[in-house]
Structure formats: structure tokens, C-alpha cells
Image 1 (cartoon, rainbow, N blue to C red):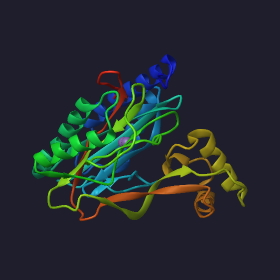
Image 2 (image 1 turned 135 degrees about the horizontal axis):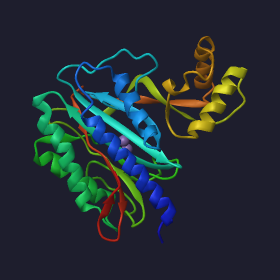
Image 3 (image 1 turned 135 degrees about the vertical axis):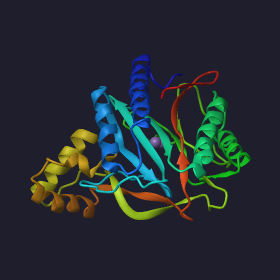
Image 4 (image 1 turned 120 degrees about the vertical axis):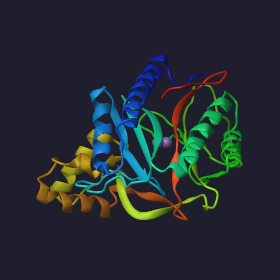
Length: 301
Ligand code: MN
Ligand code: MN
């Protein structure tokens, strides 16, 4: 039984096409010393121009920062020279989510590490077919990375995607570990190996900073401003992640800070911690979204 009808699959395919085109345009756009916010806004703008919506804020994660950083409003930070820059982007078309990432490497020392993320992703994709276990794919990713002299990030996973869902419940590990269930034809997964150097610990931890948020519950708010902001979030993003940047102009500037803070403190919305490699070693990432077939898979991105 396919999980999605033909119409839904076409929306996933369109979502993936928009994402692929955007990723390839962004590959040539990212350079050293440029403001990070320009990368975020350019990516999200291209997605909208092409008829999609960002499924989450464009993540720009530098060196040991592994995931979940997007520019806060007015971000002045720039791409440092000699850095390893992961750009992770997502699109939804009518809720149908696809997810991809690439790494721009400005340090020749980490070129092989960056290439390894792509090679591990390719090896994983070549393993995907109906009935394969997530642990087998994790094993292929781990072995591929280790054979090239690097180390996988063990506590970040690929994930099934769905309608208005970026993490739809099932995971694909980046190491060989015991998992339950199997991949089935008709399911859609994002596969995303993260690679670091051999001497790193090979796992991420939460950093205090939070730049990406999502709705938790629509509850009664104290101030009318918080209520208005929450309604905007619900109407525009549902439960998909959003950036504080995307709320600019909803309220007068002087009212925004308190209203946003109220939504955080009352847990109407939650923030995702930025992930940092525990030993502060640089990390590279590659990611595609694939549709599982009876034989093999279709790369949507
Ligand atoms: Mn991603
Ligand atoms: Mn992902």
C-alpha cells in the first residue's frame, strides 16, 4: 500500500525540484566573509520565487557548529575565512516536505572530510530499497566514513518526512546501531551523514543559543500582542520550524520583544538548541530526500 497518492507524490517531487535548483544556485553563492544572513535570506527568497515555501529556516552552521543555526534578526556575523560551512535547506509544497544540505569547504585541510560526507550519502542511497533496515544503512554510512579516515557524528540521524512534518517518526542512524522496523516502498526519508575528523569525539551537544523555533500549543496569552504573534505563527507555519526573522513586521518593532518573550516563557513556542560537536572539531554534512521504491529509491532532491 503506497503511503501517498499520486497527487501527493507529485507535490513531493515539485518540492524536491525547487529544493535541488535552490541548492545548486546557492552552491555558487556562498563565499568567505559574506554575511550569514545574506545566505539565509537568499536561500529562502529563491525557494519562494520558485513557488515553494521554506519548510524551515535556512541553517548555516560553521565549523564545529553542526546544525540549527539560522541568522537571528539583524545578524552581523559573517562566514569566517578557512571555514567549513554547512547549508541545510528545506521546502514544502502544500505541506509536502523535502530536505537537503551541502557543505561549502573553504579550508583545503577539510576537503577530503567534506567529500566523505557526499560519498557516504551516495553509499547510503545505493543501499536503500524496500525492506532494508535503518541499521544496515547506518552501518554503510559508518563504514564508508571510517574507511576514509574520518568519524561519523553518532547522535544525529536521518528521518522520515511527511506532510507538515520534518521528523515524521522514523530515523536512519549515521552509525551501525540496533533499530526497529524497515524502510518500505512509498515512504520518504531524508538521509544525512555528518562527518568529522578521527580525533573528534564524534557527537554533538546542545549549545545555549536558540535561533529556530516552533509552535507547541495555541494557548491563551496574557497580552493581545502575544496573541497576535501566535496567530501569525499558527496561520503561516503551523508546526513547522520558523526563524524570528520571519516575524518582522507582524507587530510594531517596540512591541515585538516582549510578545516574543511571552510566547517563549509560557511555552506556547519552543526553541531548538544549536548543536555543536563536543570536542569543537569541524563537521561536514550532505543530505538528500529519497522516495523508497520496490527496488532502490528515487532521489527527490
Ligand atoms: Mn536538513
Ligand atoms: Mn534532515
